[in-house]
Amino acid sequence: MCGIVGFIGDAKDANAVDIVIEGLKKLEYRGYDSSGIAIVEQNGQLVVRKKKGRISNLEEFIADENLRSGIGIGHTRWATHGEPSDANAHPHMDASGRIAIVHNGIVENYAELKKELIEEHGIEFRSETDTEVIAQLIGLYYDGDIEAAVHKAIERMTGAYSIGVICSEEPNKMVAYRKDSPLIVGLGSNCNFIASDIPALLRHVRQIYLIENNETVILTKNNVKILDSQLREVHRDVFNVTWDAEAAEKEGYDHFMLKEIHEQPKGIRETVTRRMDDDGNIVLDGINMTKEDLEKFDRVYIVACGTAYHAGLIGKFAIEKLAGISVEVDIASEFRYRDPFVNDRTLFIAISQSGETLDTLAALREAKQKGARILSVVNVVGSSVARESDDVFYTWAGPEIAVASTKAYTTQLVCMYLIGLYMGRTKGVLDDETYKKYVDGLLEMPEKVQEILRQENRIEALAKKLYKRNNVFFIGRGNDAAVSYEGSLKLKEISYINSFAIAAGELKHGTIALIEQDTLVVALATQDRLLDKMVSNIQECRTRGAYIVGIAKKGRDSVEEHSDDIIWIPECSDELSPLLTVIPLQLLSYFIAKLRGCDIDKPKNLAKSVTVE
Ligand code: M6R
Image (cartoon, rainbow, N blue to C red):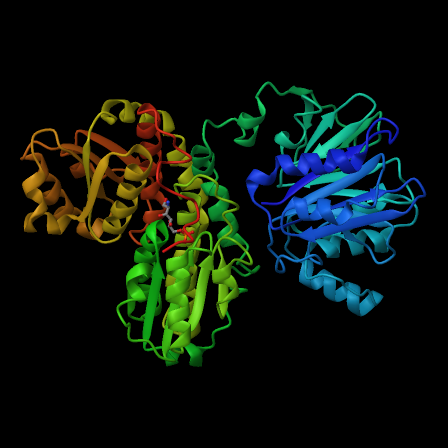
């Protein structure tokens, strides 16, 4: 995810180039694909240097230049609009070359602003980014007062973003603004800083201001002024950072996994709302399939590995139900060796967080070579899977650092629903009422996920009862069976407990032989249309002595009645329930692993990106 660092001080005491680059390095853990820096040199020239790839590429690029300045802004970019490249890297400049900006977040109306800047003002753009639109707008409004120009530009923009701005004509001032994307100010001695995250500044300052939404900050080396949306100066209490650098990267959470679990409401919200127009219609920017294209497909494969494969299982339900197309889901490492039936009437959907998983990539190449149309659902912009696909649909989860996938899974689920809705709509098989019901349901999900996260302490208490078990079964029907597989994988990969997931109706065909006194069974019972059958399956286990942890929608008393412990999820449709059901399973796995003293973010034998066969 993008990172911002800015410094303003005295070039005699400290070089902004070194401080900004060092700060950017502290944000590397968040993931990025390019980096850059802008300074105003002693001679009043604005200098911008940026490079695709690692920060070391940028360092090499400027190594011989001896750049020095008392003011600088820098950025690590995680590509959203436009592929990772030198041109798309930040900072971006206005046309006059006097103003440079760094930016985190999204300008939602950038396309219409860009059109206006090109057509009415003849501005030539050098990148594909929404960020350059901000730089050009500020440049357009600049008449000697950078603060006023920033305010005028902000009035024109919609979206969620934070920015840092410098101007060669006002080299003793930096302007920053925050709207729904983090921004902090670090208070130094004879110098001040901005950053998107605390770790970037910890080496220099521990006293910070947390900037609120719609606030502008004007920094000089000796002063920081914060203005509210009405441009009135506001007082802010100083926040003293007491965490060490490692804890700061995790924003106070004990592990990246827990932090990422808590980021899910935001990830789900962004993945949905950034694809909605003002009339509540889904607009899928990365997919260009016509009604004719969709009618041509006689076969859809969803292919992926691990957690992404589990998201594919829900994708099958969603696409079959919403778009009326039959879907097969395959494990990527199997697909490529089973000589699958693929031709130019096949739609191949690859799901991958990293976009670099070799098995998925190999399956994609196999399908492509046989003529399939390739649609990928990927988190990392510009990754191999994305580059080799015909259509790419990005999850907006932000970088996922913990090996155990959490927020990538829920955003992948959202993508599956959106693809199903898009296909159903485009094919004309989905009526307005059903479409609206699902869109509204998706929009309610962030708050419902938050409601479950508020039960964290209860789930931790439950983990304390269960963490010494050595065998766990996860059971469910329909969508719940698919989520059971994910719950079981999460538990085994981070806690090393032997766990097994099975469609509850299959128990009686063999596996029930393993259920005995005190066997732990996590029973997912959120599918209303299958509730009675699921309760029977729970009873089958309970009569054999199993300890049942039920997961059900509020008010489904029959599940509570037959369970030893119950976790409630908020009311929702059976189809969208996986977005909620998985949250307590992630938390339960996390707390069990923590109680067992496991290395949660880096489990043994596992890697975040599996680029080997
Ligand atoms: O990057 P990908 O989504 O392609 O990765 C696929 C799997 O390797 C991944 O989901 C893995 O199963 C995770 N460790 C699960 O938490």
